[in-house]
Length: 153
Image (spheres, rainbow, N blue to C red):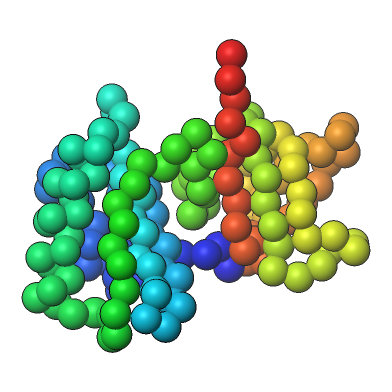
């Protein structure tokens, strides 16, 4: 499934982010021993600044110190989703229908794992994309990572 943190972590962190007026886009937890990383993506209608990230980081860091949901050491990083934003859930795939995306599956499908095309939507648990004029239906539960392809005018 799409690379993201456990649901319990999402439920713990989301209220702390939304009370500050930000949208919690998604959470990644990359366990790597003493170099593990907890990355939180936030957004706001007018975009996100470094000050916004610091504000959320301070709020969430305090919460994580008290609740201690992750064993071991890790670094906390708060970031804007960026132009190549990750898509974490079904709602993101619906929201960005019509945009160009890149995605990687967790296993081969017709001899491939990587796909790039225009997002056509979601239907019956599948992400629909058009790649080089060909309609593809990719199982949502097999998507390892998906992100928007930046568009520069």
